Image 1 (cartoon, one colour):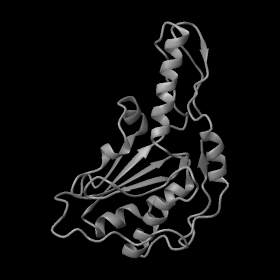
Image 2 (image 1 turned 30 degrees about the vertical axis):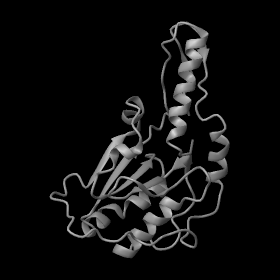
Image 3 (image 1 turned 45 degrees about the vertical axis):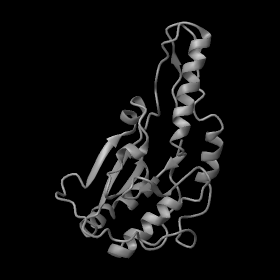
Length: 206
């Protein structure tokens, strides 16, 4: 889903983004149903003496490209002193919608928690190169490829849970284990009684 672009040099370039990662994505999307049989699904301990002063920004949506363009990692969304759940989603991802149905009940119950939804564009990532030589264009492509791979996600939903020290507690990866999603599902179920059982198949890969 990375679009072909044309650099200022006139070269026709197909980005190297996701080289090899697409194979992992397909394998991930074809893996087993969501379940709570494996991995840590226990909710994190309540942070004592911590409570949001406002619910207005408890759940906030940001665009993935706003992070990508500024070379910001998911950790930049974490709020120090609180738990922060980051979920990457597509508008067409049915599993994402089911998972998100538990977000408001969770933050209503847990005032030590923020949720940041990261919208990935349905059209994929589009960018152009500014290099004036083949070498410069290749260097830009390599940089973009490395930046994209640093996010370490291959499908949606993709969940990363940060602790109050902004360190990762649990995360999904490209290995198909979906430990971040399982933990979030277990957390929501424990706190609200929602999302019991299977969430369903991964519905969107890119």
